[in-house]
View 1 (spheres, helix red, strand yellow):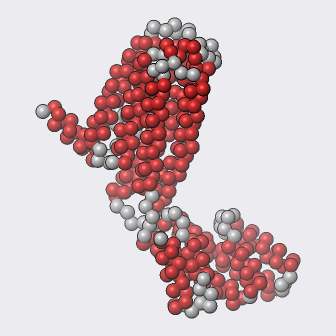
View 2 (cartoon, rainbow, N blue to C red):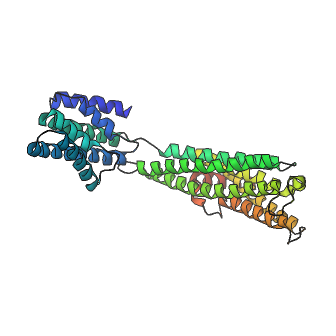
View 3 (cartoon, rainbow, N blue to C red):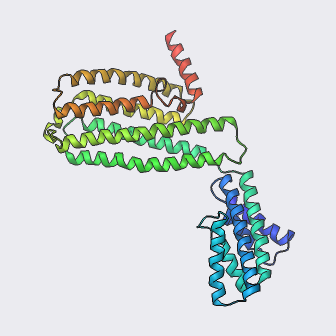
Length: 362
């Protein structure tokens, strides 16, 4: 919508204020300048203007000295490209050689009109995007919440799957899902980076900055969690496949129940974390998360006791140890009080959770 309004404004300015004979170039300047954030729009507008200036100057100079012929045209394009890179214009911006070619073909008058209209379009686009900046913080929070939800679903599916014998084929599917989350993580990273950039050159409240800091902590939390989930899925796949001396899928029915309980609890923890990302005032979710984390610590102690029954020289002991370590780390990442990403928890949720906890104690 901002782009459409910008095109209309640029057309009116070009026709009624400067009397351009070709006002369509002004909306073109808007389209070439406006991007996803105010900061990148301003940068793009400046680059477009510089590129048109470079192309105009190159064309006027070459035509004046060498005239118009095929050799001049080829040299002109080369010079425009070289000068564009020299002054720091990105390689994908080809406005300099395009402007040079158009001036080369249509004459100096066209070049001046193109410069003026492009400048008008760039200024209009940059002004509008500064006045009505797109908001990316909410989108970044939703992307983080979706990724946390995927993690929670995978943990729950793993917990359900290992409560009964599973096959190597099933384990490979789990591993593929864990790997796909890495692609989702890259997308979430990009969303968070756009949100960070969207606050530059815009008027924003302190609360928005604080929310963005929480989102960036959530990014780190989920990045580490995705890595640990791949470790869990890999361990289960190795156990079912019977590699490295492991017994294979014939023994998966003897998998300790406590690990299934651990995975189920981790899934519930990340489901709570997802709710805290989309509903910052979720005191009830924080209370529940604290309870799940405490139960996770108890289950981890039970898992260690289970491992004590296994021969330390057995490949199973090593695999269960790695699996337990991954589960401990997954639980630790979302620990709202002692974990490394406490800043991802909204202060309002903490206030509500503390009030609910104190009320229950009365």
